[in-house]
Image (tube, rainbow, N blue to C red; front, side, top):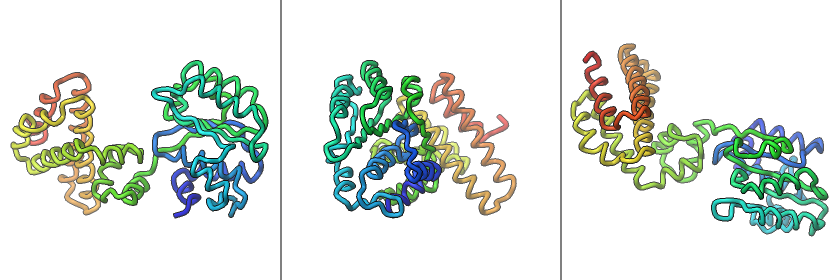
Length: 316
């Protein structure tokens, strides 16, 4: 699958919008890409840089074979600069160094491109320094900033950029991307229920604790769907020992919801009896209510035990 096809699959509206901008010579001088991790911001930034410098555009797309495209892919092009956080932040010295580079004429052309990853991590000094640069760019400059948190970007910087919103990946596309990266299909489907971020899904799948947590929750689910009261004992025996931290406990509800939603979807597809589908839908609602109680600081163990009782003996 070639680069253009992947980008068009990920963000079709943005891809078409940017292609038209290139075709009509109407590129803005600065863009702010905003969206979740894994939605294509970095890939689009590199694609735009290659689009500017490619010497052999094919169907209005970078060829990925010319010297310029290859050097940009390898982060070796002298007129394409990338800034990433130095530790926890992007520091003012990094932006000053960037400005110093851009005060010079391009090494190989009059054009220069810079990309700032995680731009929400700029220090106050760095953000103010960049703002002055965006107000008075020197020469032919294309600036591309990326962020997962638009609210952390100075409004004055936002106002000087064309803000492009990257949509979360559609579930089936995320599943396919995960499978292509080596995640098995069942795990990929489960991960797509937990997050719409490819990077986050891969990170979760590689976490040994997650794999244990998934097996524990699967066993709890198996007890529950059989109305087996072992599910009550299992809360104290396993659940509270594995899900100790707040974020882990949140994941336990997400996992259980994912299992029940899949069961409900399968039941609807197989045209199961109405009462079966209604019971499964009620259990999804019970999980959501249980999570609300837990978020209101009721103990995790109490919430889980009450959930078991209300599922197996709904009238008690």
